[in-house]
Amino acid sequence: MLVLVCTVVLNTCAAVTVGVLRDSLFDRLDNQLDTTVAALRALDQRERNNQPLGLEPGIWLKYPGGLRVALAAPDRRPPHGPGPKLTGALPAGGRTVTARSGEPGSDEKFRVRIQDLTDGRTALVALSTNDAERAADHALYVVLIAVGIALPTLGLLGALFVRRELRPLEQAARVADSIAAGDYARRVHNPLIGPRTEVGRLATALDRMLDRIQAAFIARDTSQERLRRFVADASHELRTPLQSIGGYAELYQRGALPDRASVDDAVSRMRAEVRRMNGLIEALLLLARLDEEQDTDLEPVDLARVVADSCRDAAAVEPDRPLGFTAPAGPVVLVLGDEDRLRQLVANLLGNIRMHTPPDAPAEVELLREADQVLLTVRDSGPGIPAADLPHVFDRFHRADKSRSRAQGGSGLGLSIVAAIVDMHHGSIRIDPAPERGTLVRVRLPALPDARATPPPT
Image (cartoon, rainbow, N blue to C red):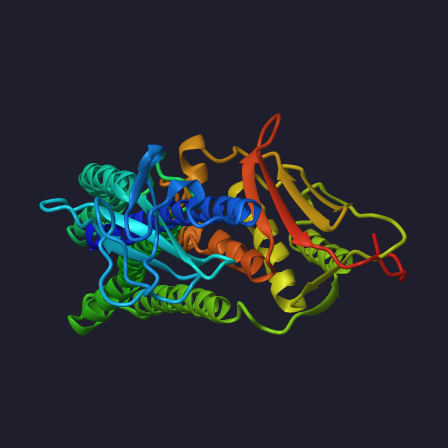
């Protein structure tokens, strides 16, 4: 198609060029005729005799430069001799015509001007068109040769250019086939493609789409893996108390509990397993609700008051533990959140300290305002978390201390609930080893502008 368009365009340009050149050459001949006629008229005015310039009526006279001049016969019959052959009566004066040569075997042509003189006679001036025709034909041959060379060259260059420009599209097709086969890491981008070209913009758009598709697949696989692990862990956690309850029930059914004290002990153990199972189910339901409450309506909450209340509650439960609390004085520390969930967040962090550190190990809670964020820091001086477990502390059912029993170590959902609450409030949480000993928890939440209020109780 490109070659066809180029052929039409080049041939049209060649025809127009040759036509314009031919018209220009013939205009030059006509101008020369005008000059010669003007000279004849000037001589005629000056001489006023019967035979100006020695012209004989009816005979063509040849002059240098291919010029021929003649006087028409008194009856206006065309002249004869070696020159243009005109047939019939002469046209009116001032006309210019094209005539063939009267010589036998000659294909020469002439431009002939008929001009009436002041004494009533008619003069004819003719110029050969051979030079003009040869120049026009030569130009035509040159143009045809140029077109003949240009067309294959343009076709070859066009094919190479189009193939080069379409190479990214071929690569995109190969990438699409690879992705369909499961290779989601392939990309179309080529550094040789200009980013502002149509193909470059298409490649960039395809790469962005592939990035999103790959991210979606990774998120799907991660979610499915987490779901499988969660279901397995939940089944394992629930199976243990159910097995325990089933074992005591089977002992009672077989009469293996001989006295009242044995029965009361078995029932007590069964009730303890039921309570633990209820706590696990409630934690799972809470995590499910937190996953659904990501877009819940939040309201301004004084985080300093919430943390101070939680610290007083923890001190009431463990009066022997040194627990310090530091908060900004003066303005309240406002965050946009759910007060009940924020209380649960602080309670879980303090409960984690109570569960995993000795009763007399000091702990510190600090609340700071940093620009447009609030930083809650909880530090303990317990044994700390092994470095290998730090990346997994927020995984559901993860326990850093594998030696603890489920009755002592909890269900492994406490920090998962904390992370879900922080995510619900569009914040971040990080757990690191304390500089000296223990664990350091940093929770960052978006802060609201300060407002004057009664400082939190200490």
